[in-house]
Length: 552
Image (cartoon, rainbow, N blue to C red):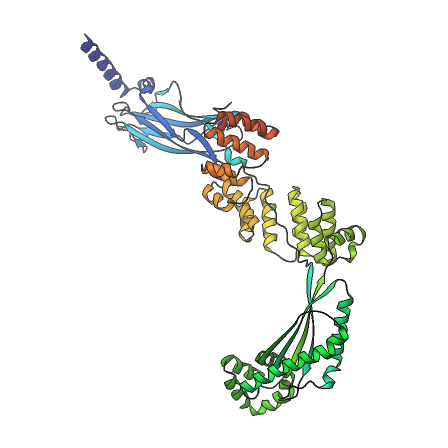
């Protein structure tokens, strides 16, 4: 009896299949024999689009040879629905130019579909609606129920922060400014004796007065004195080296007995002998109007051996006399150098001057002082002073950076347009302007012209918007920005995401909830959502976020 019953059931099914060969209504009635699937099963928005691939599997002896089937993917969401491109399939006996499904063997048809994301698609269902026709299209039958193949739309990438990271130009303020003062003692040829007139020269007197002034100045500190002795590069090298040594000794003696005796300063004295002064020779020749000086300089560049240099230069008999009279005497010398440090205004002094005498501050002091204060109004005042008084591009840039932080995009753009120098910071901040204006192509062009770390961080935001998540991870690694953990979430690296989610930022609490939900920790997800829901925007988002479908 069982065998007979099974035989009757098979015959009945076969009868239906045979009937389906000629009747579209029969195909529609037998819709349960068709299987469907979708990848992904949970839809995801990427770069403003929702893309999926759906698959329809037709069994053997199902698709009528004279039938046409139109399948329409439809995304149904809160507020409406949108249809994708119609997939048209045909049986083997239909003479149209559509994909053919075999009656005998059936078929598996895989088709991609993309929808443009619009708000409301966070809660959505992707379904396939089908209608069968006979080959003349005079008869049709709509399948009784659509095939529901995917749910929701994951929009986690839209948590990306696009306010941008502006960059500030640094000041060059020096708290300690190095100074130096120099005087020279000149010697006669082949002599190392310090002549009396050399120690009474105006140059030495000015040097002595400088040392005394430094001693009396509370802001200046004499760190050391240097004596550097030389010989002119004419004559034998070994003799010149000895002559240079003796000149260093005689200059040291003269300094201690005469110059320092008047100034009465206490500082280390460093004494050095150079020997033949080829560097000074080249400098003096280069600055002179001597005939054939280019030829002399060429000799210096061609030969490194001092003896060869001297020989080649002496061979230029027409200019050597001029060298002997005008250049070489200036190289028989000992240089005396005072090394001083000047104490610039302290932070306390600058803060006092901001309130009482801002006009005394130079460009660098104004720019540096702005970093010492927290009050935005005072910062603006300092930058505007530097901008107007010194036409400071850096000041205009920093004004723009402050405006961008406040979301005052137009004001920032106006300040940047006043910059006379197009620096890396200019391009970064112009990129942030474009980012805030949602002109992402212009933003990308500007960021590409800047090598600043801020530009790299901003490019990371663009990578997220464009769906290039691995590139975003590379750009944002170590940035400590809200976009860094988001990038890790998007590539499903939850360990790194968790490490980057430290802090009390509400957006980070929301992302911690996402990580917990994806890892099946509903309790932690709820706890983090409670924290994140202090933000009205995030609380509203959580109500429709498919990330929490298994949490709420």
